[in-house]
Amino acid sequence: MTVQQYALLAWQSIANLFGQPRYLPETFQQADIIGVGSLPIVLLTGFFLGAVLALQSANSLARFGTSTYTGELVSLAMVREIGPVLTGLMVAGRNATGMASELGSMQVTEQIDAMRALGTDPSKKLVTPRMVSTVFMLVILTILADICAISGGATVAVLLLRLDAHQYWSMAWQSLAFGDVFMGLTKPLLFGFIIATVGCFYGLTARGGTQGVGRATTQAMVTASVFIVVTDLFVTKFLLTIFPF
Amino acid sequence: MDRDEQARQAAIAFENVSIGFGGQDVLDDVSFTLGHGETKSLFGVAGAGKTLILKLVLGLVRPDAGRIFVLGQEVTAMTEHETFPLRRRIGMVFQESALFDSLTVEENVAFRLLEEGVHEEDVRGRVLEALRFVELEHTINMLPSELSGGMRRRVAIARAIITQPEILLYDSPTGGLDPVTSNTIIELLVKQRDEYHTSALLVSHRLPDAFTMATHVYDSKQERMVPVRKGSHVNTHTGFVVLKDGHKIFEGTADALVNSSEPYLREYLRQ
Image 1: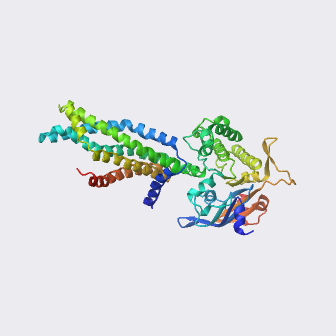
Image 2: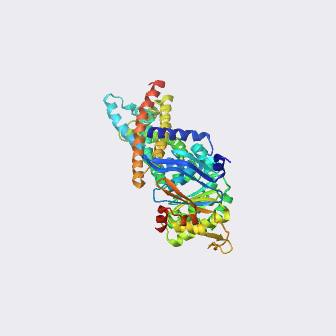
Image 3: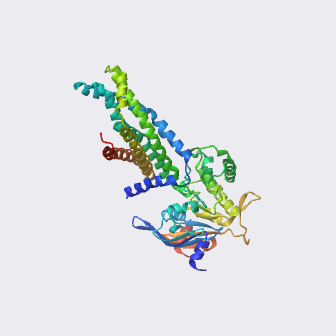
């Protein structure tokens, strides 16, 4: 039943794109909250994760005398896998919970019913703008997180590992093929959709006052995170068949 | 005229409506009609299904059996998507006001106009007019959390009436309020009824409020409600529906209710 309700809401959020009215101001407002609001944590975690990845991988690569490949490893790992998942989990933690608590509070105080009674479809006014802005902003955030992570890796590689900066950057850049970038940008599209629809779903189905809102918030975080990781496996498997190494 | 056509000509018509939750019937075979320009007060103990009736009218909840007609359309045969245009012709005042807490009073009252794409310059004027009706113009830039309970109800009334809907649904508009504020709200309801002749369903726990509505009219010269004089032919078009154990046990005028010999009603009125 829950899966059915979720599937219906997820489908409705897409179907609303092809009908009137479209809530552009709400979409821009959400893009600001989700995109600009999440920027500091995404950039910061991206930078330090890239740095630690360079540190760990350089040690292992040094055993085989291939520490010059640090740039390539950081770049490929971040763009293909860690960047989208890390950004997805960060935004899930910040925004899926935010959506669940905001919509959950509206649900338990009858504001959602009031909206329906006023002749406005909550899935159009509340869900679709959040879905569109999360999908769009997650792609941008992922690109920025990837750049920050590769920069973090470069900082460690140059300052601590004494690798050549030019060599690091050219290895990082040249290793990326179309398939890598395609994979790295396809995942945030799906993860953004998951974050917004799961967050909105738990908010709109919240019951039982403030305790219910708290429960919805936790469930949104847990479900969105697990959903992202599981989806990542299947998407990676699928895309590897199209773009093999 | 057949029964179907009669139901379609009423503002609201319930035909043998039943609904239950968790295996327990809340409404069982309930039928009643609300004519155009008429007001009906719904009474019953807590959990009798009064609020549920308002939600059924709006199509927010679907019955298990029976048919509901609102403004000539069969709500029970419509999808959620199809009910949105119909809901725009109805105003609802929720029990706890249900104002959007992150929007100002102006944005709350203007909500429906903005959704309908009314030009922003016209919106401001109409919001002020609606707030003037409930005597709360000065709260226009305030947030709902800055208002008292009574003021929130009045803002909710302003939000409901701003488009001059054909039907108004009031869910315990005086619940939890002091007698003076309750009287102010009832006066607003009487004013709306007599100045705009809107059909209305009123859910209330307070019999005196409903009797006040049934026995008073709004005097626009004195700008207050006044009692209907004895022997006068003025008709307030206000009736009563009483529910008990999921069934409708009374539908009629204030006089018929007072003179009813039904033991439950006698007991209810005494309390």
